[in-house]
Length: 350
Image 1: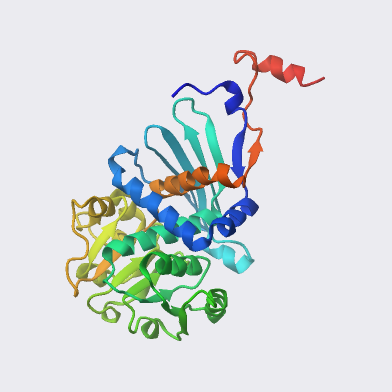
Image 2: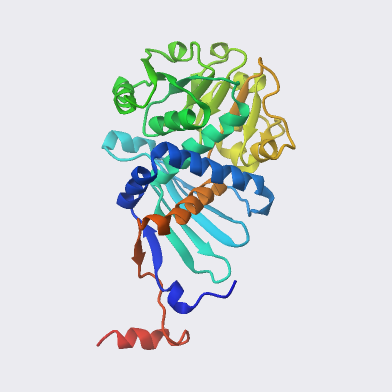
């Protein structure tokens, strides 16, 4: 492939929040969730190509701000993301994000995108892709414990990829459950609002926990979890924040994205450093086993990893030229003579 000319690199495609929402409607949210899941799975297949590091986190008592970088050797990507559980009470999003892809050959950015919506899509797509490998065959009922901003995306991804069509919903805030019930009307679900977590998990083959409070909580206790279920634990995503009693981990086969990060941020932060886990890329490649019996409890300790953001950004980039849902940003100084940046600034005076 020939090197790009300077004129090719002068502008950077930018996907705004408005364009991302239009993209979702243009493609269809279930189709988009399936597409992102395919990209995430494909990148897990080539896991060993990627630079991998735990996200760079700046913690405060209010929350966390993080950078999540990775590269496959040809394209570099990162996401900026925050997690501030207290924001909800102030009418703000708990999570906001944006992301960037860059060409490794030149170092020039090739895509800038909002990722608040895209993170919700990729998190749900990853959960459903993992459940495809780990959940009981024929699972149709999911308990959704925590009915905040992620809940509808999780539900629709599980439906799109795995055929889940019955949701049992619980949140400590009944208004959140009412919101989720309202938003999911007409999407092909049987919806049941539940008064307790114990009620929510009755008859569920998949249990998703997605709560926001930054604390070591016990959303599920050991006696609540019966044999044969798949637990999709995605709410514990930083030090000092968990959702499951550790005895559940002892009874489960635990699957993770990148152990050095999950041991810091996930449910397994409660466990000794040598606590055995299986990496999902190995299951997807067929070098490790996923679900092996009907009675097995599988547990995905999902904290979100940079390769998944990279996959989601790749998916969006591949859709841009067929949809036109982006704008060109003039964010790269591009003088005719690369050595004359000062001259370009001076000429702008006129």
